[in-house]
Each structure stands twice: as C-alpha cells, then as structure tokens.
Length: 327
Ligand code: GLV
View 1 (cartoon, helix red, strand yellow):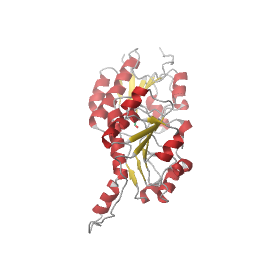
View 2 (tube, helix red, strand yellow):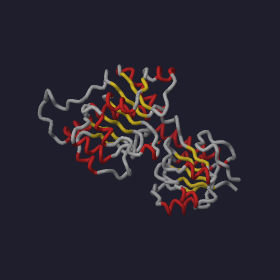
View 3 (spheres, rainbow, N blue to C red):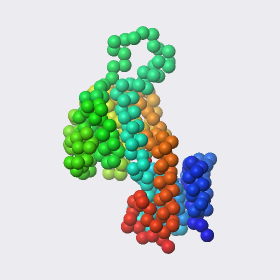
View 4 (cartoon, rainbow, N blue to C red):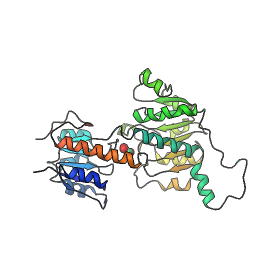
C-alpha cells in the first residue's frame, strides 16, 4: 500500500501528479487555511505532510499525529514548525533552500529601489490625478548607487544581494551570527563584517535577511530604529516578528528613518493597519520568491524531500538529522 500524504495548501497540478505516483494524496486545491484542529484532523493517519508557512506544526499538533513521519515545508524558512518537538516525535522536517536565493535577492533589490526612490508612493499620486507640473523637489529620494548597504543575515540570500551591489558601486557592511570566510566576503562585493550597532548607525540602506528565531523576536525595535540615520531606509524580506511593527510605524510617522520596504509582517496576512496611513512605506504581500520558475522549483524540492523521506531515504534538505525515524 502506498504511504498517504496531505498537501496542505493549493499547489501546481503537475507537482500533485508527481506525488500521486508515490502516495495516496489528499489535496486542498480550494486552498482553505486550516485551523489547528482542522490541520490535526486532516493530517491524522497520514505518513507525511507537504506544508507551507501557513501550517503551524507545534508540539501539541505533532503530539496528536502519532503516524506522521515527515513534514516537508515549501519554504526556506521553517519557523512554522517546532523542529525540536518534531525530532522528539520522530518526524523528519525539511525545507527548500538554495532554489530561491537569486529570485529572492532580485526582489530585495526591487524593494530597496522602490523604497529609496519612492516608486509606489509617486505612482499612487500620479494615479490619483495629482500630477499637474514637473517640480524640482518632487519626490526626492535617496541615492542607492555609491551608498552604504548594511545586510543583517549574510547567508546565501544575503550574499546574493551583496553580489548585486557591485554595479551600484556600493560599500557593503554586514552582520551575521558568524563572520564569512575571506573568499566569500570578496565574492560578496568585499563585504566588511561589523557589529550590529555599527551597521545600524552607518548604513544608508539596511536589509534584514536573517531567519526568524524566538531569540530574534523584535530584534529591530524602537532603540535600534533610533540608531539608524534619519535618511536611512529599512528593507525587511526576512520574517514578520523580527521587526517590532508598532515601533516601525512610529519611527516612519515621526521620520526617525526615511522609509521602509516590507515584504513580511507580524501576524501576516493580517498586518498593522497603521502602515496603510503612511506614504513612506512600500508594502508587498510576502512575494520575494514569487516567480513561476522559482515557486515550481520550491514545490518540486518539497516533493523530492517527501518522496525521499517516505521512501526510506535521506531527504536532501533534512533539518533534523538526529531524528530517530519511525518504521
Ligand atoms: C519564504 O518566506 C520562505 O521562507 O521560503
């Protein structure tokens, strides 16, 4: 008998067809977001789940699913899964690194450019019929070329962002859990490792690219925003919760920093409506990896991981190699 799986959200039909060759598959092509009790009910009796950021596999959820052997997330981030609890419960956990690095780095640049050069704000103004004449001081923004880019979180995506800055003749500084090798720093436009406070105080544009962990909750709050230059921009493509959104709204309103570009929010898809009243913020709905090719690659990587995990092999992107696999 084939193992059985749940695909917890809508996904490309060809990926479902691939999974159906290996598994009994329950789909959710109507794309409902399951409550905790529905997630338990749908996952009960399944050997694996193809999950996304919206399914929270907490210790109580994992504890209610004794048959579950693998949760394969279609995302590089996996803060929706309690990996320690999964390891204790004998559940393999995987993510989809690498396939989204370049696409996500492209988007970080799109947000930076839109934020620093006021692209969406001026477009809204134009669409509202307010454009009567050219003005010498209309929508003055901040230069990107020749400026200092500060990247917090210099993993593979951070490095891909830094590489793109060479054409803009930028000075790159970064902060990370650990310093990169000299070779990787050289490839990342000669990025220079600095302390977090030095980065916040000296960067013209600050990009957040680090993975979320509870220790980093609100790591950018009122005190950190106050360290930044009043002319600085902040771009967050990391995760909601890393920035204290209420403090950011206050800083943007009081012009303590110039502008922010945000692809992620606390409690998304619900987000603080205070952002909507601000013109110096660019808001996008968590789409940094959203190109057809990359989302397909992510879905296929999650499928590969699930096929390996339930086929008795070692999935390429296993996050908890210490897990004691269930028979
Ligand atoms: C998207 O945010 C991801 O983690 O892949």
